[in-house]
Image 1 (cartoon, rainbow, N blue to C red):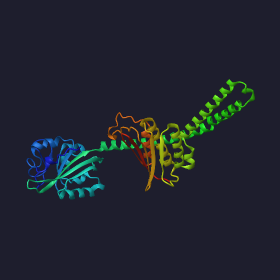
Image 2: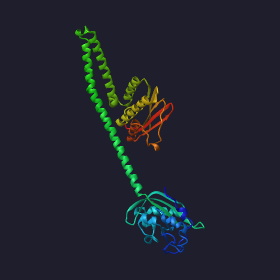
Image 3: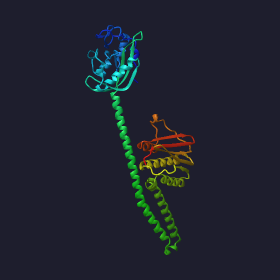
Image 4: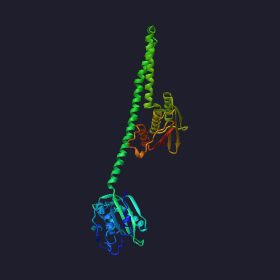
Length: 388
């Protein structure tokens, strides 16, 4: 936080009546006026002002520079001799001179101004990013006599912020690319499972069934038993591969849309886990954009998987409703709940890949994702803009 030196200056600057430059008895802060030694900055405070790393500058109400500390030399590159008596306009880029007039207008009304982020120009022509605090200065009678400005060079901070934003944007781009590649790979593996091993095992089942019917083998009870057992194992293997293929990428999602794909997935989930799932979707939902449908399906799929693994819930509800320009989906279980970490205190917190994956899917589509949890209830909520 930028320190506030304005109290040090308020009330101790004497209104200038004639121009001149002098050096204070303590420190090298320079100022103008007939009371240069005793008025502009009180001697017991000048050392504090002088040693500040921030630029501390005072000026008259018309913008004439009256004092200039060492911090100002460091920030702007000008020596006191080069600026005292000059207009503060020399510190403003040409395209910000209107801003200077607005600032002086506010200060003449007795109002302080804080600029968290602005721009100034150095002696060498370099544009710098600054944070500025400006206060009107009054004499002992309360009359406005000038302006104090405290300026901090935040160019490094701004550069770092921009670099972080660039890195974050690149991370989001890579995360989105990773999700797309993951979905494409899931689709490819699902197709290869369906077209390869699933079909081959189906052929094996037919062969085993044919062997079980051969007259020559009926005399051997053990051979028939082993054939029936092999046929049963082949059937179970085929069913498992079909389920895996569907979980990797449900073909119904591409062919018939979210409502049908979710209903089929929920039916299979109930059969596999015994957890009762209630699915409530808007009537006449229709087709959504393929990216939206895929994101909603994956979030529902991951939420049900989390409920099965962690919640100990015996029932789950999936509900969705339409709002203007967006769809809201909630997956709610009635289990033991989960601890939701504070986003500002994520160090050392492990959420696994499921929750960050759901968050990223929502973010990639310009949506919102949140989890609310308490003992006996956990709700995953996602809001996505519609793209039909």
